[in-house]
Length: 342
Image 1 (cartoon, rainbow, N blue to C red):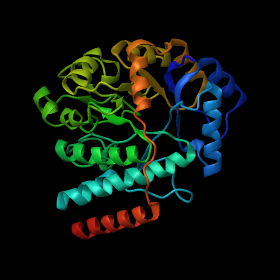
Image 2 (image 1 turned 30 degrees about the vertical axis):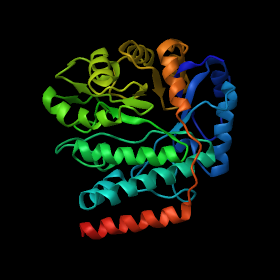
Image 3 (image 1 turned 180 degrees about the vertical axis):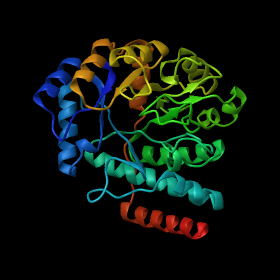
Image 4 (image 1 turned 90 degrees about the vertical axis):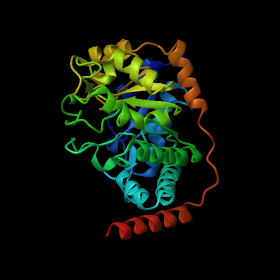
C-alpha cells in the first residue's frame, strides 16, 4: 500500500474517531509520540498498535524524541531518567573510551525501553556543536564543543540504538549549535563564514553521513542562503547536506509547525518538499494543521521511496543485552564522570 510523505503526531493518549479516519484516508509514512501521548507502558504500546493499524502496516515507523536530560518523552516512574549528552562529553574529555562506553550504554538502554513499546525510531543522536553565546535550546543536549568529539559520541549512541533494534535520526543537520534563537519560537540566523561552518558546525555531521535518517535545522546560514532556513533551502540541502556532508539517507524536516518557518502550514510543507526534503514532520497533533500537511504531501515515490525503504531495512533485531548490568555499568561511569569534574 502506498504512503504519503509525512509523519504525523496525534493529540492524546488514545486516537479520536476523527484521527482514525484521517490516518486511514491519508496514510502517513510514520508517526511521532510526545509526552501528551504517554501515560503508562500498556497504554503506549496500545497507541502504537492502533497507529499502525490505521495505515495497515506493522512496519510503519513510530518515532520519539528520547535523548535524556531535558528532552525525554518517556520518564519516571515507568521509565528511567537518562543523562543529558553533555555528561558523556565531560567523561570523554578525561577518558575517551569511558565516554564512548557511557554513550553506547545509554543508546542501548533507551532502545530496550522503546522496543518493548513497539517504537522503532529515536530522534537521536544530535551532532550540533554549540558555541559561546548561542541559545540554550541545544546547550547540555550536545556531546561537546568540538566536531570530532561530538561525532565520536554521536556514533557511539547510534551504535547502542542500532544494537537494540532502533533506528536513529541524526539532527539537526547541518547544525543548530551556533543558533542564537530557539527555532521553536523564531528563526535563527547564523552569520559565521563558510570556512568556520565547515570547520566546526558541518564537520560534526560529515562522519555520520552514512546514517539512515536525518532531520533538518530551521536555521538560516547567511554565508550560503540568506533568505531561507536549511529546511526550505535547496542550496543548503543540495550543496551542504547532500553535497559537502554527503548525507544520502532519508531527509526529514524538523517540525513544520515551529515558529521559525513563515507562511501557512501548507506553504511550509510545500517549501520543504521543493527544497529537497523527502519527508515532512508535523508534531503538534492539531488535526486541522495535519490536514493541510496531508493535502500537499505527495505519495512516496522515486528516490524518496527508495531512501525510506533502505532506511527501514537497516533496522536489525536487538542483540542480547543484560539491562540490569548495563544500567549498573552506566551509573558507575556517570559517577566516575562526576568525580572527575569535582
